[in-house]
Image (cartoon, rainbow, N blue to C red; front, top):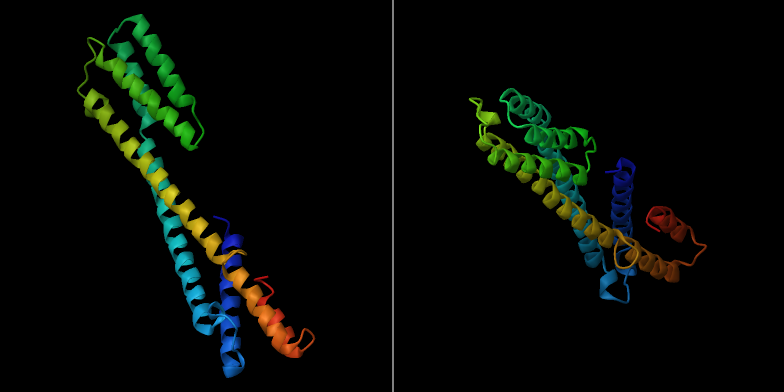
Length: 222
């Protein structure tokens, strides 16, 4: 996630907190015409935005961890499929099957992209290799990770890790939407700040030093 973007939201939260402190210090002079501009309502807006910001940080960390786990799950795939291919050749399995194995292995090794689509393709090819081996007479090995069961475990571990990335990303995207709503110009901190400014402008006058201070406080929000 863009660090500068995160810093920007932190600055907006800080500015909104400063605005709340400012209107609190006005005492009874700050008496807005609608309930959603009261100090209590502004504090609730600030709390909601802060909670979403913290949740976003948590969800972003969980997403990064899931991607790390997925990458770890994929690590054995290249060496494993190479060993399977070498073994099929050593066992003297028929030429047509070996050629299919070569093609599948090439597809797995040739997918360098770390995108979800690229990883999905590698997993699909691994599953194709497993299904092919299930129908091969004479495929035997005393190495557990090269047995059909071992390859199925590898594929299962990859699938579980890849699915977790998708789930974590979905949650992260939704949290980002919620943050945009909490900070946004339609009903979030930006929207409410503009209305507070308009009310204070009506009280203080646009050229007053007090209103200029409000403009300074809220500049990052508007």
